[in-house]
Amino acid sequence: MKTNENWLIKHAETEAKKDVLPLSERAGNIIGIVGGLLAVLFFAVHQTQSTGFFTSSFGTAEMSLLYISLAVGIITTAIRALFGRKNLARLFDIFGACLFTVTLAWLYVVFPFNFAHFADVLPDFLKFLLQWVTNDIARTLMIIGIVVAPAMAIYNALMYVLVRRELSKQTRKAA
Image (cartoon, rainbow, N blue to C red; front, side, top):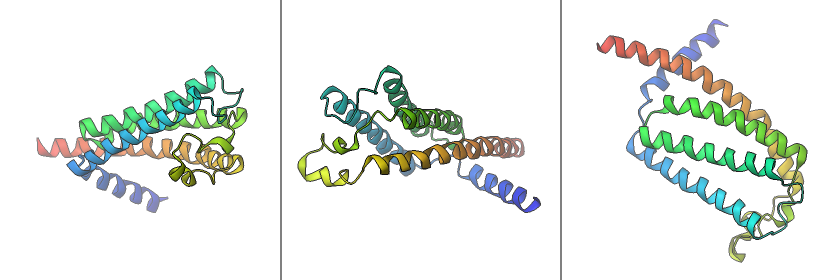
């Protein structure tokens, strides 16, 4: 147990030293925001054009969970880019991971998708990027997400507390 504690403390110390993001990483977060907006657009086009990707089971609850989860991800990335602090964004990461877990679990149970139509909104020359995704592959990826997202929430909560403690030590030393 002592080794795990030491590893966590050392990791938190390292994370505290890297809390302020360099300009390049902040720019990368802006690219992440654009990617998130493209994901929202991708699903919105599927929904508005009735491509067949969303089945009749895709109701208001499913739509709300999907788009709110995407929005929280975009907001978290924007906070990281705007403030340039990793630890501040961890609070939003924790909330986002919890919401993402609930969203994935709900969508897994309801499964309002038909992945045979997943690539339908892409131009023909890009369809190969997503045509390989089947319902079974999507379900498998969702299960992985249902397991990984809560683990990330726990990790981020732990890192938030430990890094915050380390940052406050650094502030006291500087004063």
